[in-house]
Length: 368
Image 1 (cartoon, one colour):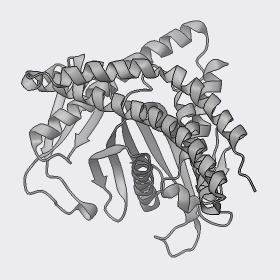
Image 2: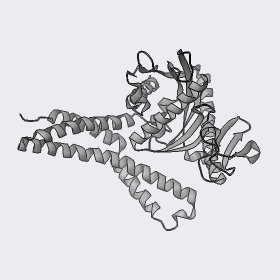
Image 3: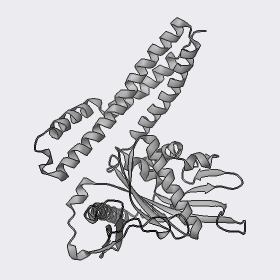
Image 4: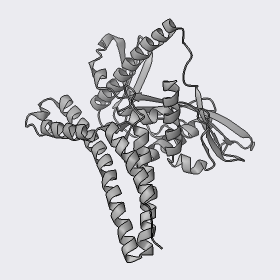
């Protein structure tokens, strides 16, 4: 029996063509060529900060170009594979072609979602902070579950995620953690995860065998190049140094290398302890503090404009998702109503469905 995937491949090619037009592959190639030339300059590292920006932008552009051109090559290869399967009447090759069709459909779907990310900061890397909320030990444990979930998601995407700070709770779990995701469109994708997450389960920490509800907050901010242009006077920052600690408060560093910066006028606090030296931790903390201050300034300006326009209704609810680990075993997003009945897969980083639904939901809200 002849394998006929021509209609499916044609449909994927049509979608892919639209995506390539939006992404502008020719512009991407030109960007890669220009940045490669800059990266090859002999005096590049005379200015380390500028050099890091060039190499980071080059890495992002190359990754984006590789994803798009890779899908194009896979579509070509799939057509060849179908022809070979039919010529040789090879059942294994036919099964391989059908599996590759499904895989390509997922890959093109992910690229299509990216075309919806047209916000001002969507293309930027992201800094994610998770904080335990109400719920005692269960909330701290939940916060650690969310941290692992997002790190696994980044791993699945092939993204580089660097944990910058972790504050461990005394009994179990974490009080908070901050990690940076240096990948194109990390902010646009992960920003739909920002908000309050709720966990309902039979607590493993109590003997009463009763249902326990706990909460954790997820904050996502873009890492902005222009944030470094924000000048923060030294007298507005309080600097505290302390020893890095591991689970249960155990010291993992014999020197005071961890740094906590407090912006006195706003009360914003940023801690970093995962770099090797106090100087590195202070520089990393300052970068995040600058990004938060810039974002706060932009949000205040936007809020004033909304107030003048008579529209002060927030577009995002505070609680975004519920995780049920008893009885029905369900994870449900409260904005999109997207749900899955396998919480174990979700906590292992399978977030594609939730993030795709969230990005589409946000786009509809923005366009309305």
